[in-house]
Image (tube, rainbow over all chains, first blue to last red):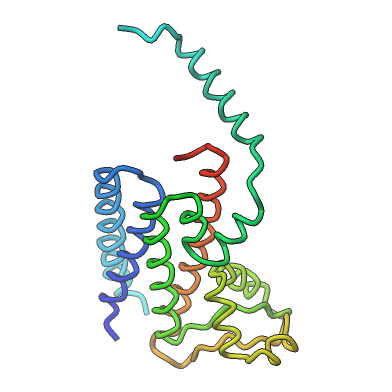
Length: 55
Length: 158
């Protein structure tokens, strides 16, 4: 099971959902999608790295 | 060119419109439909694109959760957190009820409510925790769409 693929899939679904829930224009949706998707992917990956030292 | 209204005037007008909007009664059947079938509430209100996107996203998350051997939340008296999980999963509407029916059978479903329901899933599976996350996320997203339908139908949102 590829954990990164699951992270990307989850981030994609949630980002698309909130882009359509909170924005009504195409540009607004695209911007919010990119912002939330990147925050979730980069933040999740960074958190994963930070957790390496812990058992 | 100015609009002729001060900032305070516009703010008061905005508050008045919001107060009017909260007086509009949202049909309970609409909210029930929005909860029961993901996307149906928006479809009824004519927001077809949003309806399709919400339906596809929520169903995809739910199916992913099931395929990863996630367990549907069901209430258990000895575990208070199971009530929160059950609430999150119940948000999936027909997907939740259909899956419970699949797992318990009609007779089992009726006789097991509320504390003996089988939520499926395999705690030993590698994807168990991920599957649970997808199932909870799908349910909570659908509950947010119900709130969105309520806002749209009473005029607070387009």
